Length: 161
Image (tube, rainbow, N blue to C red; front, side, top):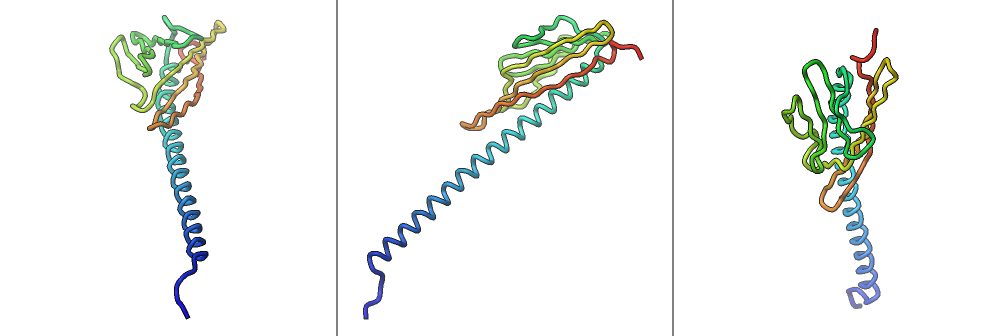
């Protein structure tokens, strides 16, 4: 009696090993893509929340809108509250905020760019509303994801109680 494997058995084992290896590599690459997609979504939503909360707060507390560019990209938004003017502008791919002409810095993180921001102003004679359409883009390695976010707020200083 001879011990060992036949040629057919060795080829079957190699084929099973190759199929298993390819399946594991495919799983690893898809997990990597899944992680990048999750991380991109997390960065987009975190930055959008930060930016839109700040804008909504400033819009709600504003008394008037001055010197702004509406319904065009890149839009600018300048809000007046008492002696304070808060402005939102795009510089390159970054969204910047300034108060009374002094830059307060970037509103978004390093991996985030702002390809578009549009502002819309509605005034019915009694109240004023500002609507914001913000597009954020994240780049992680070769992975790029873009998402649109929106908010609107009534300027509290513009209506009578």
